[in-house]
Image (tube, rainbow over all chains, first blue to last red; front, top):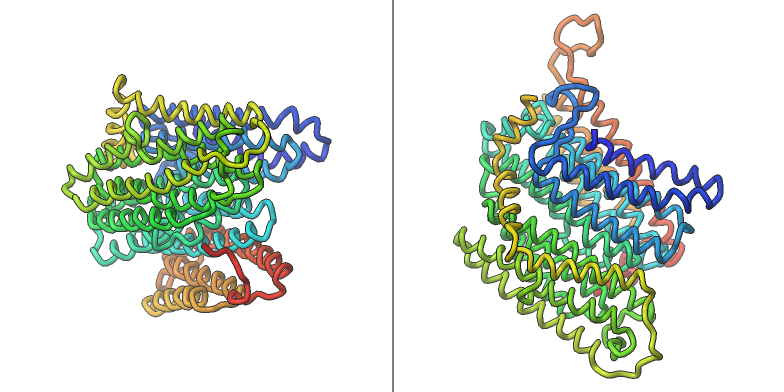
Length: 487
Length: 111
């Protein structure tokens, strides 16, 4: 019940908002915070219900082989929590800045949240494609929401690339359907190991290309820097923090469930893609003069980190990838919110024009510093912890090249984040003392505090063991199949 | 017979992909998207084919074709239509600014 509500509540909110708007702005002002909070709470509740044991919801009472089923397990729970926090933060930021005025934004926003929850929960391949497309469509709309020429062009580019990726996923799903006559993911997973190798390779190629296009891994990354840097601040934070992670989730889910036993060489391909996007993203980021583009290319690199973790295909690798996804949501949403706000206030995105920001916008720059230190991987912060576990996982798997790339990438990222920070702290022609409004500062402070806490937590509580458990449960496809098909 | 239709579907898919990759006209890119979509959908529809099958209606005489792919196809057509609609809307916005749909003449977002 709670699983379906996590999709239905934001979905119906999206359609109620225009009706409320018809009856004046009072209703909107009253209900919009309730909708945001409700979606947040329900998503978290769905995450909590699936964390310990498999939580299932069957539509219309049909068994899983015949109908559509929602499944929440450890992996989807972590990503649901990630989506809840990321969406919540970006909702808060936008609401604080704009109020209830631009109601169309909220329609698209809730549509995005509903379909994201759908992708994270669904146990049916075609259903996943449908949710995936609703969520991509909402994302294209959000990118071009401001209708400036950059936003429109970036949105169009994102749409073309994203749709090509979607059709590759559809093609993969079609092949899977032809081969097995079913689209239930558990049933597919059960019948994949008996399939001929050539079929598996074709399906795997379609899926990996499709999801890499959607996630923006290196050879397919062209749209990502444009889309993430041209959107408005709240959307940039949402895209980099959450939307990309949903694609990563689908990649993890599909590759583990379908190809974990049947075709392990998929994981080598994912590792290679990860190494490429890590190095490519960092190298491109170090050449950027525009702060939001720099952050966007850094996202490409961080996707590389996560994909290396996935490509290890071991419990520690998956756990490190999931942990890094969560940390990256905190760090990159925070960075986009602080940097976007600073850029809006001084009306330029050029890094060289940001001299002396520290002297008149102390709070924001301090938060940015903590978040940048976290994403580079300065020891007691969360970025260090997850990168450490990624390196440990890749050394355990004896892929020393991947481990070397992880360390080398960190050095490059340190160089360009230090370049940004040194500009911020250089005394420059400062405008008058001016501090951002309290709520934005509070959001930025919350993100940086989370980074510190999550970095210190593994020393005191067995949080890493929790992630390893999630990873090993995600690897255990037999349990998943049994839980879904036998109920 | 069924092999030919599979090959046709993939051939159409590849034509769409080639159109998107090679053409510099934004409208042709959108057309390429729809062609790609048709290719994928043709593959799904073919999946439901049963040789000598009858429509899956009661009362049934003989083996029925699989009706599931048609439901998938209808859903996917709706999704594709909304994708194309949004793409065309954005192309119009781009055209209003640049007075052209040629990608080479659109300065565009560069590094």
